[in-house]
Image (cartoon, rainbow, N blue to C red; front, side, top):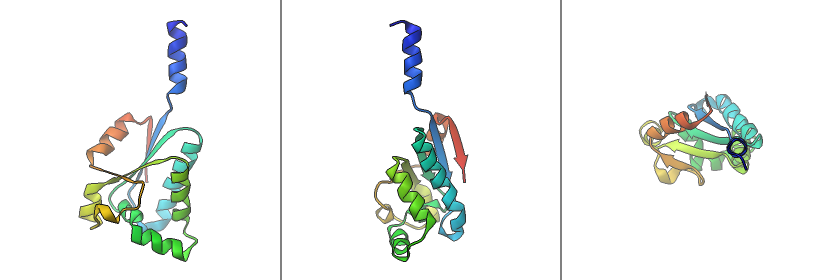
Length: 134
């Protein structure tokens, strides 16, 4: 196999990366639907997709809040959140926002979310092909 062919195949195999940052929480719920919907679309298009929750976004990851919303039913955020997880979207939460702005602990967060420091946002942004902020 020639070097050019090997390079071409390597580029085809490497997925493009998209990062979506969620800064709003339950207090502004209408602004939280699009980020998870877009994440689901990107994942279904075979982009390596990550969502980073910060500022008030961590409130959306509260076990208590999600449980209450699931009981009520009909919350589009819960629907899009589940869809994104099912599509393999990686989800991160900023621990500083979680604790200092949302007054939550790590144990308050739903399963499947990686707890990270704020510097991870910089790393993810620099690594992504595109970044969307909501």
